[in-house]
Image 1: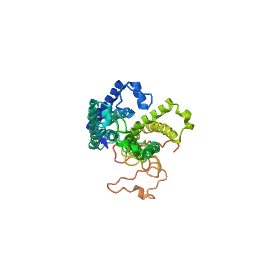
Image 2: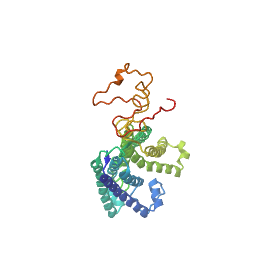
Image 3: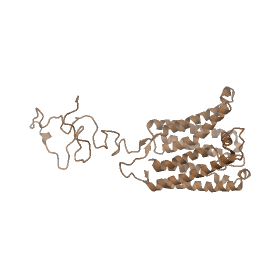
Image 4: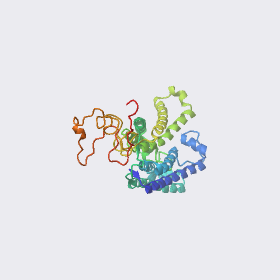
Length: 386
């Protein structure tokens, strides 16, 4: 289905509002904490000393990219409806924990009342915008106006298979680490997922466990959707890869900053697996973006749709494909009137008129019967080598 013009504009406006909300918090942190120190804080460097406690994480920067791209896609893309759905789902998943975490005692001791009040207002606004995106995507759909209109696209066979392997694998890795976290540190459960005094995180962001679990489910959903080449596979896969990229890149930055690979052989097995996971996440995010970013194939019913043939000679362009029997118009190159050796008495069936209302068969390349549109008449001479 395709979005109406009004739905596209509404969706773009909502994504723009979400982008402004995230950008305002990022600007606040850059000005209050110093840009260089903010980057060190996001990367998890021990020597990070921000002037003020940041309210954001690297995920907010990724969300800003998602919202900006969603604005453009809502106005121009054939998959605008699924882009709005993916953006709305991610927004709800990321901002929902803020409703009960922003006012927690841990946040009260770390941030001022003014900041927490603004963060709560922004959380409600983001959730309302996320719900509105889902409603807009559902209510603004319409069937194509004609064969000239661009239809939603699906990922190609290679892109779908690659996306399935990459996103499903990284989603399984993230879930495995979450299981290990709960088993090894049961005392932090459930604060690790729903927030609490024992776990510190950004003022506007969800707890780390919640964030990782949501990202893992998003990767698994996008990966499984890519296998049957679903229309929503590309938008969800691109959003998942974008949100996955900061964690992998910052992990690689930590590896380089502390020269961890120099001592990789002497590290405990769990530490080695951690470093390998960071590298794997960064690689998967980059590859998934490269594979899923190109436009896919039109979402048409069956191998060919009327008016959407894949080339000269395809159905939908008003002409049959090349091939036997025959090349020319009906009767061209076959025994008939004017052909040497033709005997009308020996072939009475060929001279018989067709039943009323029925067109005679047109084998081969023949000119379509009764149609105002179609290919030009066949040439007067067969092609060379016929």
